Length: 65
Image 1 (cartoon, one colour):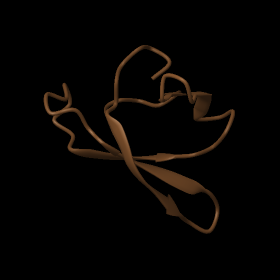
Image 2 (cartoon, one colour; image 1 turned 90 degrees about the vertical axis):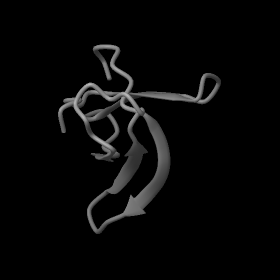
Image 3 (cartoon, rainbow, N blue to C red; image 1 turned 30 degrees about the horizontal axis):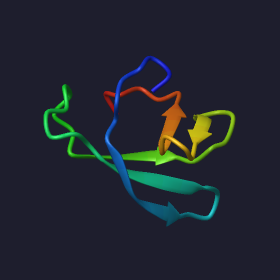
Image 4 (tube, one colour; image 1 turned 60 degrees about the vertical axis):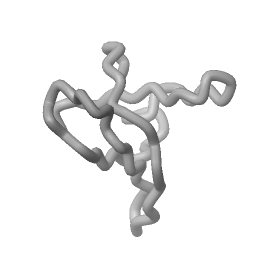
């Protein structure tokens, strides 16, 4: 996230009618007890930065979701 929290690893991308959605497998010791997250791929709104070199995606997203 933009706050530095690691949501997990992207394992899939779903296509929906309005936008794509990242399927993220949460880390084993996720602080919120979440196993999987669905994060909309909205460039500029939710997706803040994609770094192909480090294979990271920075998102503006509440880790509790």
